[in-house]
Length: 256
Image (tube, rainbow, N blue to C red; front, side, top):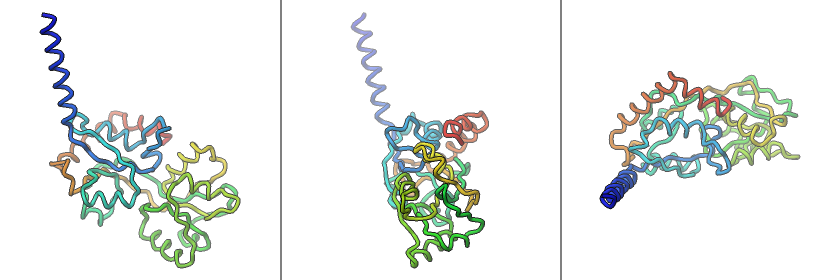
């Protein structure tokens, strides 16, 4: 009798392992975008977007696999379907290769940071004229900012960086490489707090734009068969956790 029970238990465990291994792999980009994506192994938190995905993507069906990629390569892989889902702000050109969810995952204020010792104030975009801009490579900008960066490149007034933390160091160096940096304000606040430099930098009041970010599915994804249904299920879950207060709890973990 005991022998039979052991055989049954063994078969049940084997079935469980097989069913777990049969989950569909879901490839996601793991960009360095605090506090929305945290991919530093030393961080105890995963990031706002990852926490939402964990709650609202069916983990019985899909196994989420994050791959660290630069922003530009993420766009390329979303076009080819090598990445299945990504988080994007709305852009009509991206609709050629992705399908957007309807419910925003989160909102980000898009603005500027300067050294606390700086007297720079921005009240309109024309005020950027005399300054060297720190530009994070691959970051999506508004058409107006893109044109400003394009014009400034001709004057050698753009410094390209590839990591927010490194750019903070360059902004605060004895001889700064640039005067002002562009990114989401949430990123500035989060990293300044983590790096213990809150007193050394100043996030300006001016907002370039407030942007909503959505879950998107690559039209070329081979791992998501019914893409519209996948997004509808995600939207329904997101609405539910917003109504039940779980969404606020996630944001609160990151000081938002």
